[in-house]
Image 1: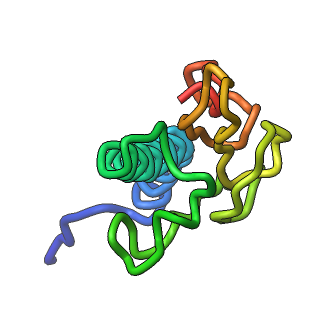
Image 2: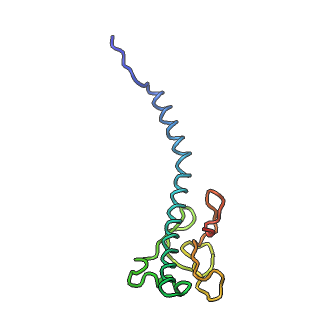
Image 3: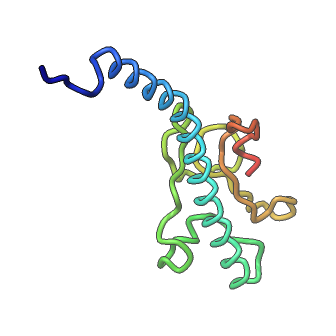
Length: 134
């Protein structure tokens, strides 16, 4: 009589359940980490464009972030960012941190943050840091 080797049905189910549990535990932190990197990369790109504009014009930055996209000299378009569960992707630019997603940019003369740009989100990341602090 020939014996079959391999997994029996219950063993396959237990193995599959263990793999699914590990994936369920590992996936949310990985997604949050990827979102954080995506936001930081977009913010870095935007800040670099503001710095190039400021150096070219000998100012602290543009009056409006849309100036960076004119003729595509600094950026082809403003990067859109969002956070799953909080904000949909947006490249909207506001003047106040009001937790609506997109960007906040200060172009007010005399403001200590003049020329600064940050993510318009007051929620915290997996490390407890407010997204607007980046």
